[in-house]
Figure 1: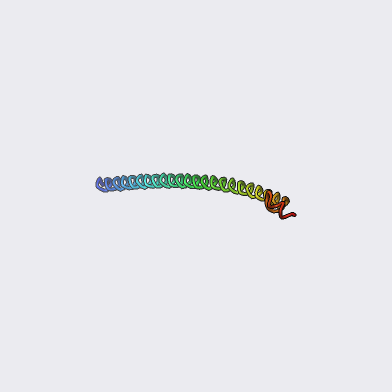
Figure 2: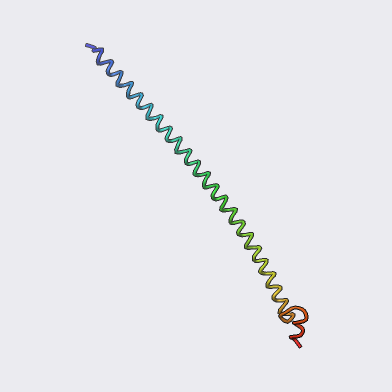
Length: 97
């Protein structure tokens, strides 16, 4: 009634299925780990890029402020020259006469 060959075959099939399932799971986990690692790597890369961009923006802002201050100083000097007669010193006085 109970065929030993058939039973063996069935057990072997079950074992193969189990092994296959385990390997598939292992592969999935490995891929998941790899994906997570790449995600983390990309995130860090983006952080680094944004940090560099922020530093560049700050430097640009500082340069713009310096240029504005320089421009204001030049405007003040120009206004003073105009009040004195365009040129400084003797030449301005000569022109006024």
